[in-house]
Image 1 (tube, rainbow, N blue to C red):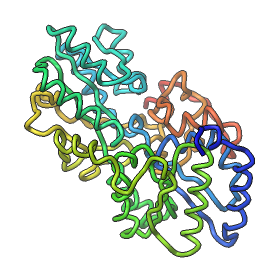
Image 2 (image 1 turned 135 degrees about the vertical axis):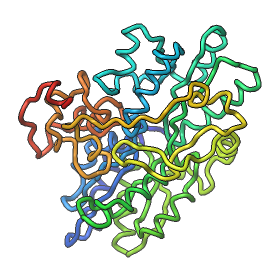
Image 3 (image 1 turned 90 degrees about the vertical axis):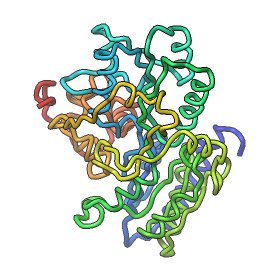
Length: 388
C-alpha cells in the first residue's frame, strides 16, 4: 500500500477484525497497552476498539510528552519569562497546560510575560537572531522524535555564535518509561494494571529503531509490536500480538516496516549523542522519578543550557487533588473513571494535561468516544473543588 487512505480501507479492516475474532482465545483476556497518544486517537477516531472481541482490551499508556511533563517544569518555564525577563518559545500544546496556582504559559503571557508559540525550534532560533538584546529560551519537550532537531539547533547556535539563545531541556526517553511501568507495583504486585503486550511507538522507533525494546521484551516477557498510526496498522499489530501471546512468545516485531528499521536513524542518533547525555533521574507526571529516562545538555554546550544559564531549580508540585491524570498515564484508570471528565474538565476548560494535549487519552475519549463509554459521568464539580 502506498497511500494513506489504503491504511483506512473498511473492507480490509473487517477482514482483520474477523481474523482477530477467529484467533483470540475465548478462554483468556488480552490487555494491550498502546504507549503513543497517536495510537490512542487512532483507536477512538476509527472505532478500532468496537471491532475487537470483548476479551481484547486496549490500555492507554503515558505516550504523550505534554501529558507526562510535571507541573514544576511548567512553573520553571514561567519563571524564566517572568523572573529573568526571557522570551520563552513553546509549542502550542504546552500553552494551556495548567501550572501551579491555576496558572499556565498562556495566562502568564496574558499577564505580560514574553511567551511565544512556535511551530519548530528554528522559529526560536530566528527570534534569537532578530532580537539580540533579549534572552530567548526554547521550551524543549518530546520523546526521541523531537530530540534530533533540538540537537541540530544547538549545534547551529554554537556555529553562529548566538549568545542569547538557550534550551530548557525536557526531552524524555520511551524505553526507560516502559520498563518503569513494568516494574511498578500496580503491574508486578497489585495486579491492578494488567498488561500482556505493547503496541510499540512508531515515530519514536523511526529514530531509535526496534532494537532498544528487545531487553525488556525478554526481561519482562512481554511482546512488543511496533505499529504505525493508521487504523489498519493498529489492527495488524494487535493480531501479531495475539499470535505471540497464543504461542507463548515475547519478541519484538515490527509492523511499521515502511518506516522503522532494526537500527533506526543512525545519523539522528549520532547528533543526539553529540549534544545530550542521560540524566540520572527525571520526574514524569504519573510515574514519579524514573531513572535514566531523560536527557540533559552536555557540558560542552552548557552555554546553551537554560537550566545552567538561569540556575533553574527543581520544583515539586502535586497535581490537583481530584485530577486522575497520574493514574490514567499509568494505565491504572480510564478517563471516564475521573470525576472531573466531561464536567469541569473539558478541552475548552481543561484541568489535567491529558485533556489539554491533542494526543492525550482524555482528549481522545472526549473527541471520539466519551458517549460510548460504560462508566457514567456524574456529579458536576466546580473549578474550585477540582483545584483542591
